[in-house]
Length: 213
Image (cartoon, rainbow, N blue to C red; front, side):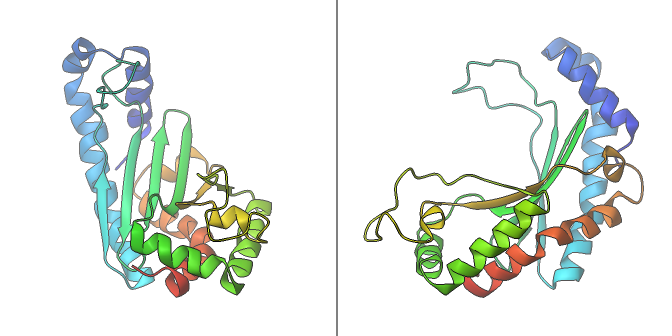
């Protein structure tokens, strides 16, 4: 599981983001990042599966950065990102750990064509009104929502549609940024974060009803 040594490694990597440094510290990476992430994922995924009655698949994102289209050529990510795919919606619970920051989230980050069609059919009507209220409640409780991708309401919907902000979306994601780092550390982290993920249940329940996988 993750420990304070995980945070120390990420902080050191942030200050020494080179292949030479990484090679000299690979044993630390293997122990405090790679092995710890696997243990954490193996603990949290079945907890989510049991609570929500769905198949959950963990994906640990690579520490190596994709440099093909980036001006920043530092070779390594200085965070741990793990997604927990939710078979019931096609969305995922997300976990992000940095040296001084812990973020969790839930969302469907790119609507495919069938999802996009179902989304627009839903949010143009009363289910959209319901979702607007759920999102406002989430904001008021301190959660953060992703911004709409489109600048204009797509046709054939009117520009002044009451749910224009939803119609301009091509994804939906909601985040919690205020958890102490300690929730990600130690043997109780999986249980703590499974409980913390409940904050996303109202949005997920709406997706179950109106945007199933």
